[in-house]
Structure formats: C-alpha cells, structure tokens
Length: 430
Image (cartoon, rainbow, N blue to C red):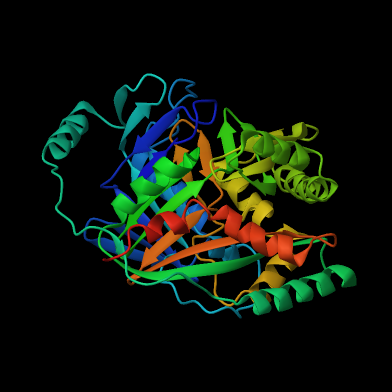
C-alpha cells in the first residue's frame, strides 16, 4: 500500500507512506467483516469501525503520545469504500453490485517506510520491540522486484450512460430539487475498459501527470485501487479536526492568460459558491456531532486551488474532537463525505442509489490511515480507478443544484478525467 503526496510541496504534501505484510486484515462485505490473522479467519456482524479500533488496540496496544514529527508510526491503513456507508445508514438496494471490491479493506501494520518529500530522506518506523524490528528488517531485505506483464488497455472506454440518459437523470435530479427533497445531489457516470497486465505502471503514469496531494495505490488480493485524489476528507491531529471539501470546477487552459481568467471566474461564480457553501454547512453539522461545543469554525471559504487538469473551489472547516470520542467515531459521523453525496446527505444517497446504474464501490469512499499516536488522515476517493476482473473502472460526476446547466455539468465530468482516460489510451495494446 502506498499513500503518495504527489502534489506540489506544501502542508498537505509532506510524506509518502509505504507498507505491506500487515499483522491482520479486516475486510467488510455487506453485513459481515472478515478478520484474517495468519491462518486464522473470523467473521463478525458488528460495526466495522468498532472492530477496527478494537483489533488495532489488541494487536498494537495502547496509543502513543502525540508526535508532530511523523504522520504515521504504525496502525491501520486502507480503504473505506463508499458503500461502507450502508453499515451506518439504512439505504435502499437498487444499483447493481458488479465490481468485486470490499466495502472496507484495512490492514493493521506494525511498520512503514516514510519518505520526507522536502528532503527526499526515508525513515523506517516500527511499532514493537527490538526483536520484532530485526525480523522486519530481515523480511524487507528478502524482498525482490517481481517480473509482471506490462499494463495495456484492451478496449475503448465506454460509459454506463449515454448523453441522452445523463440528460434524463439530470432532469430527475431537478425534479427532486424542485420538490424539496434535496438542495444538492451528486450525479456520476462510470467509464469502463478491459485491460491486462500490472496496474502499478499505470498508476505511475497517472501520478506523474496528475500530481495529486492525496494519491494512493492499494493492492488487494483480487483487485487494485489507483487514486489521484486532490481532496482531503478528514484530518485528525492532536484532536484538531480539519476537512477541505471541493465544490466548483473549471478546466485548465493552455493559454496562461485564459487559464488565469478561468480561475478568477470560478472564484467569483455565484453558482459554484452556493454549491460549495451547501456542503460546508453539511460538514459543519457532521463534524459538530463529535466536536467540543463551540469549536467548529470555517477559517477559509472559496479558495481556488489549481491542479494539472482543473481548478477547484475549496473551503476549510476546523473543529476539536470532544474527549468522549475517538478517531473512528469522527470517521463514522462524517462518512461518506458530504462533498460527494449532496445535501441533505441521506436523502441524496437514496436518490443516487435510484439514478446511478451501478454501485460506487471504492469511488467516493476514503483511503487513509489511523496511526498509533492518534493521528488520522483520509482522502475522498475522487479521480479514482478500480481494477478488478480484467476491467478498469473510472467515475466522474458533480454536484447538481437548481441553477445547474445540463451541458455544463456533463462536460465537467469529462474535464475531471482529462488527465486520466486519455493517458491510459496511450497504453492500449498494439
């Protein structure tokens, strides 16, 4: 597993984290969570995040004191898929479940390699005694590069809805908005193509092109997740909470003056500001469920952040985790992220289930870590691909409000994958 700070150097891009060979894995599929440790495999029907906290404590012991120097010193790393939200809220079962990826796939690790992005130096962190560290060093020394077949697309990309079908679903969203069911609904289309070979080279190509601060590559037993996410979901550091929802997008333009004008237009666009503010209010409420009373604040509204393919409108929300709650409680209270559902969240998720043909799986979930010293950092899995069963799936969507235009929203879905789908086309089988 790799968590890569691939964006320009900054506060959100300090370390890369690599780990493998976990002490145990937790894999949630529907109502059951399977926990595997060595030859032992147990199943539970209790809350997956409660299980995660219990097993992390059982395997690694009590939490360490807070440490500012390193983001991760051992703990849990993995995927929390969008459909894990079904364990926390009652949702209808309408969309097809055609991709075999767990709702949660998390490992508990006693070690990691950390790369300081600024200095280029590497550190090995290990949670345990000296004998355990020696065994881990021996294991690392015994690893060698595997020979794998090259990655190649084997078909054209195809969407799960035509332009006409997107228009029909957009009209249905507008009807729900007019009826007062919601004031924002996220609508997504999925692109799929056949592929063969190793997914890791494809991730490397995409990472270099997208330079996303919350990039990740997750190798699962039967699949892989390639994430080029620009969006932080939840950071918890010394009980300080931060979330940075993205709402509002404009494409990057080749001409520098036109590109700057595009960013300035986004900064002042009433429609995008309105869309962003709706999600800020939703996340303030979500965070407030587990925060110390009076601690939730919005230090930054409507900042423009630029990435290789698009400009985004980003806001920042802070809070202080109440002493009666822990990291998994914060994750549960806010999951899945409101920026990729709409608002109110539960009704928006019900409508998404009705309108989108297939489940989102990992897309719009989160990838991240819960460290032994209390720090948690997670992304929103946008600009994210799933590789499973010889198929590569990539989603793109956006929040729709009453003022949205169908042609603009449809084009925005393509703008968001402009540095993903065409790049992988260049790796097509000859």
